[in-house]
Figure (tube, helix red, strand yellow):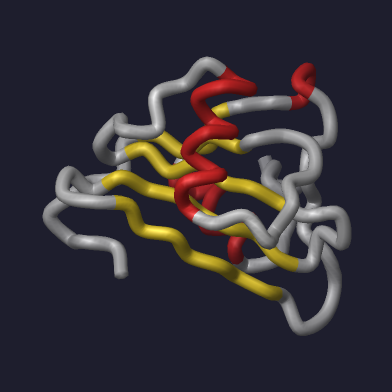
Length: 109
């Protein structure tokens, strides 16, 4: 469960497809080795998506350990970037839209 006393400061999409069978240790290694990022950055959520794009995993370090969450859509797929060129950091509003099954960018400007 996400702790309320650890504010979310950064949300990072890990682009492409990730083997959704991976657990915490393997996802931490993926963040470190493949992307050169620090998975022990408190308040940072790393998002991963599989080949079907119907589920995502979120990895967060909370200071005393990692939290791994999974969200699976009953219908539809997540709109997921597939290349490093499409990689980006999300705002909380974009993250909320993503988890709700919508595109990251709002169509209303």
